[in-house]
Length: 289
Image 1 (cartoon, rainbow, N blue to C red):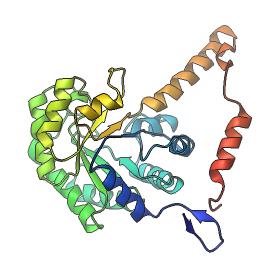
Image 2 (cartoon, helix red, strand yellow):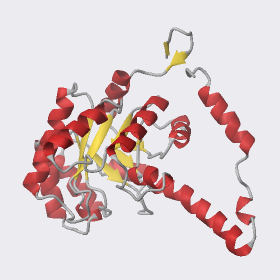
Image 3 (cartoon, rainbow, N blue to C red):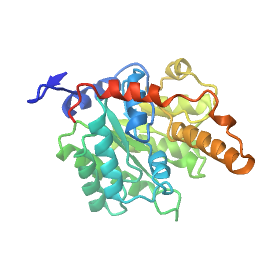
Image 4 (spheres, rainbow, N blue to C red):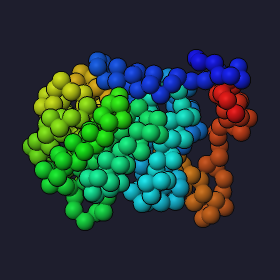
């Protein structure tokens, strides 16, 4: 830990977190769960996870927005708050960079890097729901623009490029792999094809972009453990908005029971206010106020 002028301990620097995040991608397999606010991030950090990632859907829903409906300023403020509140590397789910124009995309990526995140991901699907995917040449140009913006800012942020085929209704593995290979050639550090679920698909993606690392979205009951995915060559495992939906589903179930049945059975076994106070009081010890 570092010491500040007031004598309190502070966490690792942004440069240290970025260096550690890059090291995590060099060998082995790690889980990068997705908190949706500072409280969930700090609890995940306490469990020993080596890195965290934001979730666009989890944060948007918690703020009363549909996924993708928040402004760049809102999204970037969230990234900064999360990066400053945690001691482990943070990857930013930056959707499509929140821009269609290449110049605006580069500017947004520059702003994203400035929030202190250790990594960021860019999707190849427009955030306007008009078409499922950018044409390949356009998508590659976007990857290059993001790569250049990161390089101008220092180049130490891990850049993940996403092929959105399987979550946008374009279930074409050959096209997915074609895109991922093109994004790797265009400068992506890590490749990601959310929505693939079968062992053969995962292994094909890993083989196609090797030796670059692959992120796998384990957001459902697919039956794959960390050990299973590590054996397939996956380097990084995220869960998307699933943890946020676990919390939302529990809230909806309890509130619905109260509204419809006048019962409070869902509160049985609930963690106490005192337990949470104890955890967060201890978690804040040594942090500057």
